[in-house]
Length: 123
Image (cartoon, rainbow, N blue to C red):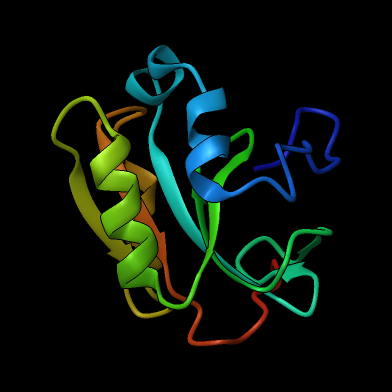
């Protein structure tokens, strides 16, 4: 969700999620992992990064949000699965198992990062 410069890459904010999903090429979905992240009070909790998208759960690639906000990670996950052109391996990361993220493949995964409503900071 962060560009190489460390700034938030702006997606099609404000558009209905089904329209936003149409704007993302299928090839981009196939060539990368998808992520489900929570935004609260303008902060992407996992990344501790400001954004101006509405609060809720969003799914997207590592470069942009595609659809959201959703009321739960389950709804965002279901929406991402409907838009993927192939089956994805669901990986749910929490504070307890986050070290498992080190061995993930660069594509084929749907990664849900559940911070339990807390902002994560880098140590």
